[in-house]
Image 1 (cartoon, one colour):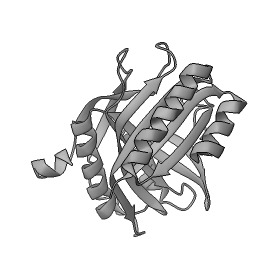
Image 2 (cartoon, rainbow, N blue to C red; image 1 turned 60 degrees about the horizontal axis):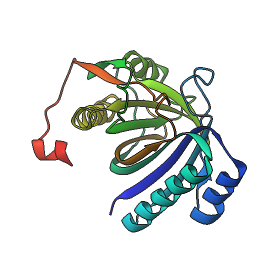
Image 3 (tube, rainbow, N blue to C red; image 1 turned 90 degrees about the horizontal axis):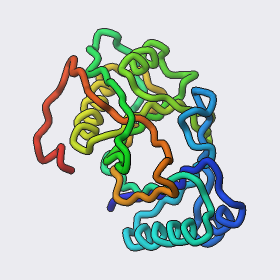
Length: 225
């Protein structure tokens, strides 16, 4: 059974809208802690999680209807389905495992939205600093997010569905062999629905190109999941 997420990503939300999201629909705050001084991540990030597709569709529609009719936010709403979710047991980092890819980013074309993204979450304080450096050199975007166990570092990339799936699987294979991640978790989140309050809203960058350095090939059916 798939897990669905709905995120409200906004520069601002009205108090009444936030009350509606929390009390009527069950959203909760999952605000980021910016790695870049707050230039790319939304200041307000609220999340709803459900395994019920009908609840997902109904909640998304209610969020958009309220936001439109009350002009209750500036930002966007994204509905996602989790298609890959893997935790990594800690093992010593092996610096001899080759890096799988290096990414180049670009701005998202107007009137479009990303198709998918992956999030690699880990503990920055206890993970091997050599692994963190290598992930940074891959060109992944970085952001911090509070967790129950502390502040997590999230490495992420967004873009085309097939490319993101291939990147996700190759990154997972790399992490399995390279080790060094503490509290490591990798998720792919595919966009099922989206809405924006304004055509001028800016979105995070997407992958323009991937330079493959040690690519593993996976069965085509795996890439379509």
